[in-house]
Image 1 (cartoon, rainbow, N blue to C red):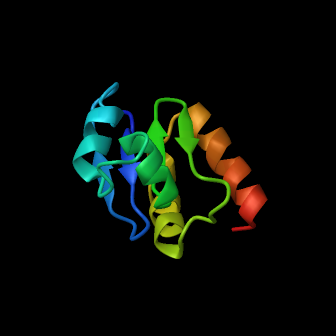
Image 2 (image 1 turned 90 degrees about the vertical axis):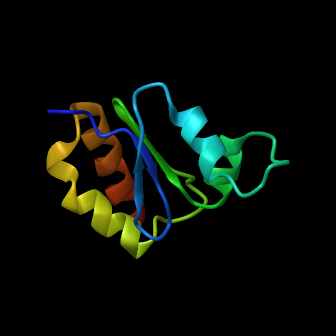
Length: 95
């Protein structure tokens, strides 16, 4: 099974990338060309970073309903580290 790697936007659209290409994809998705980094821009806009063994989100912002729906509908494709992070997110935000 291919790993789930990419960025998940607040509307629930997943942008897939290859391992190690998060920065390149972030540059394509950023709308703030003067941000300290493209990844910071995406974090501030509540994107969720999904990579091998990790699902990372900005803890200041609860995942949107669309992001939650996407995460739960793709749970069977996540690796063990991603599942651990999803469980922490579910516990923290109660979904």
